[in-house]
Image (tube, rainbow, N blue to C red; front, side, top):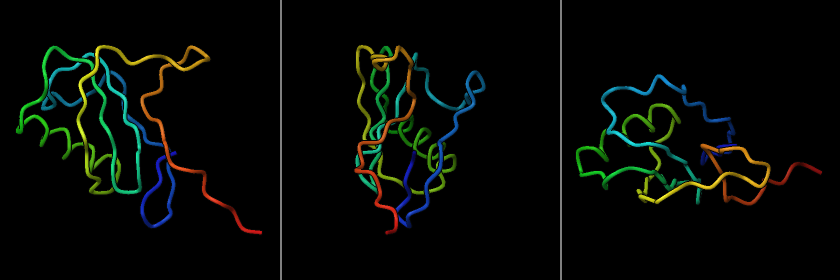
Length: 101
């Protein structure tokens, strides 16, 4: 689950097949939450995004995720599926939150 700095958690939801046309073209993407303030955007595409394209993606994701995260873009050749064969468009590398006693 996506974790916000205030402790709230939510499942990020991306409408499959209804990507806004204002976003740059890419074949596949995966968001990886690296910290409470940073998300890595892994994407498969023909070329890196330029500054204007990065700004479009950041604006869309900040609105969708509900927080002004810092985004790091990383173009990759492929995004592997999980051990169970599923494609995960969001992963968290944060340690699990402790629950009360």
